[in-house]
Length: 422
Image (cartoon, rainbow, N blue to C red; front, side):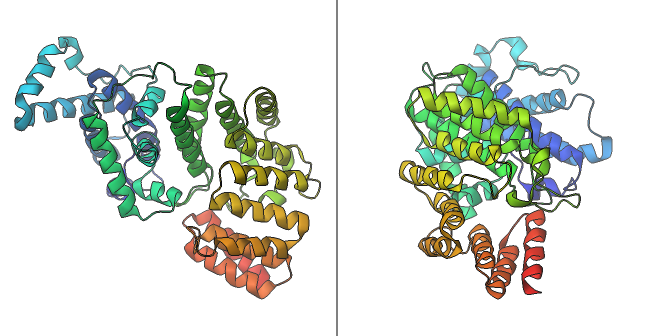
C-alpha cells in the first residue's frame, strides 16, 4: 500500500525515517487485513487512513515501539467503521459481521505485531485473471509494491491521469469478481505468474534506479522485491523465469555498493570500483542462471540475467565480452521487444561497432514512447561524447538533466555536461 508523496508530505519531511517505516509496513498491514476480511477495496481504504493518521501524529509523538501493531489496530478500526457506516449495504454488512468470529473483530493490541508474511498472496490476488495484464501490474505496484501512481505511470511511460484511471478500474473489477485471498492452485501456470514476475521486476527496477527524489536507490522497494522473488522461487523451483528474475536481481544488486560516490552522485558502470561488488551475490546469481539456462525453456528474465552475469564476471568495461552482450540483447529483442531493450542494445552495439552505429539505432526511438525521455537523451549524450561531438554531448546531457527526476542522476548529468562543455 503506497501513500502518495503529497499526502504524506504535509506531515512528514522527505528525509523523516517514519516515512520509510510507513512505506515498508503499509503493504504488510494491507495483506493482514485482506486475509482477515477479504474486501480488498475497503481494506485498502482503511490502511490508507491509518497511514495518513500515522503521518499526522508520529511527528509529534514519535514512532511507536511497535509500529506494525499500531497501524494494524488503527486500520482494523477504520475498516469496521467503514463497514458499519455504509448504510446502502447494511444487510450484507450485518451478515458479514454476524458470520465473523467475535475474536476476529478485535484488532491486535499495539504490542503484538503480526508475524505472518502475506505479501506473496496479496501479489497473486492483485494479479487476478479477471483483470487485464496492464491492470494486474498497475494495481499490484500501487497497492502492494509501495509505488505512487506517478511512479507507476513513469514505469509504463504513460500520463499519471491515465494510470490513475487504470488502477481505479482494476480495483472495481477485482471487487466485482469476488477475488479470494489465496495462492492459485497451480501458481506456476501461465499468465498469472508472469504478471507477478513483471510486478516484482518493475518494483525492483524503480527501487534500484529511483525515478525521482533525493536518493539513488530505494531499499524499501529493492529489499521486499528480492525477498518475494526468493519466496516465489521456493514455491515454483521449476520455473525458469522465476529463477531468471531472482538471478537478475542478485546480479544487479551486487553492484549496489559501487553505484554512488561519497557525495551520493551516480557512478556509471564503466567507472565503478568492481572490488566493492558483492561477490557472494554474483556467485549465487551466476549459479542460478547457469542452471536455469541448462534446464528450462528460455525467457526474457533469463536473458537479462545472462547479460548481467557477463557484466559482473568481467574485470573491467574494456575486458567485457561486448559481442556476447550484443548477441544476448538481440535475442531479448526477439523475445520481448520494447524501447528500453532497444536503448540498451544501442549501447552494446556502440561498444562493438562504434558510437555512430549506436547513434543510428537510437533514431528508431525518436518517435516512440521514449521520445523526450531523459534516459534516451543520456545515452545519446554518452555516444556523442564517445564519437567526439563534445558540444552535442553537452547539450544532450543538459537536456537529460532537466528532465531527470532523480537528484543524484541530475547531478551526474550536469557534471557530464560541464565536462563536455570545457
